[in-house]
Image (cartoon, rainbow, N blue to C red; front, top):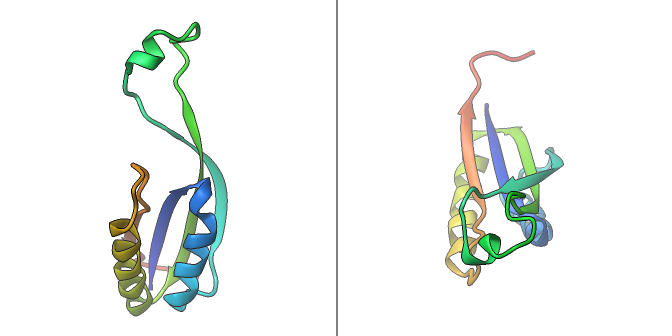
Length: 101
């Protein structure tokens, strides 16, 4: 068993739910998060509130699941990201679990 975590912008929530279903990950949790980038842009420099960093409404999804489901999910995420025309791909990580109750 491993822990898989996926982050996405809010706009892709339904897509992530679909990918989890296709990967047979039926039990998972999600949470609203704020995504931040610490880059300075011309637009930000010209902003009255240039010291305030922008954030994106994002989602965090996580599940304790089997390796097989994670392999499927990663393949589906790669396919999904290859079709994007935005600069906000889905990101995923896997964390091994040494012990659990």
